[in-house]
Amino acid sequence: MTMEWSDKITVTNEDNMQLMARYPDNYFDLAIIDPPYGIGEHGQRMNRAERWKNPKPIKYKKVQWDNEPQSKEFFKELFRVSKNQIIWGANHFIENLPYQNSPCLIVWDKKTAGDFADCELGWTSFKTSVRLFEWLWSGFRKQEPETRIHPTQKPVALYKWLLDKYAKQGNKILDTHLGSGSIAIACHDYGFQLTACELDAEYYEAAKKRFLNHSAQIKLFT
Image (cartoon, rainbow, N blue to C red):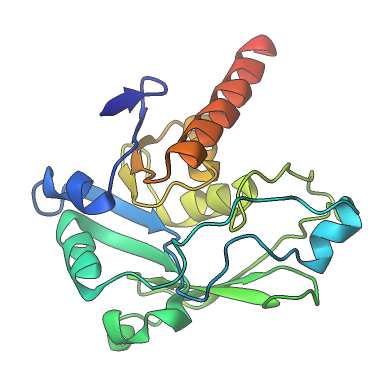
């Protein structure tokens, strides 16, 4: 089922292997993905940074999608359909990523000593140096806080930073695990064409609502 959220943002509610099977080799210029790490994170816990912002716990539904990491077959297909890749959770997929071919890792410093990791690592296919991105969920710095709708949600600011550094205008972007839809908002604001999918129907609808609310506000003030 293909759904066009805007003229450049197309998102489907389906399995990522089904999506990628429809595309020829190297169709996408850049894949930016945040797959399940296989660490059992289903949103039943809440990190300290979130408590600072909202003392009342967010009750995410209990699901099974983070019980196992993505398969070797998934990564093989991902590398087939995309020219370059940025893959979050790099330390959880060591056996499936060609570390020796890429000196460029991305470090997201969350600026919090919460219940989870202080940083997250992103593997990239680029040949540049290691890069650091700092962002605090609670908004204590200059960044605006975001309402969380997904237990592994990443900020829009992170995806805009990635697009600024690693994408070129006209690039076709792929995301195989849409989640909260942060990348859709970033691509919309920056004018990139995005093809993405989300398997969970409830999170698909929540991300769609978030995206449409954002795009409506942008139109209102432009």
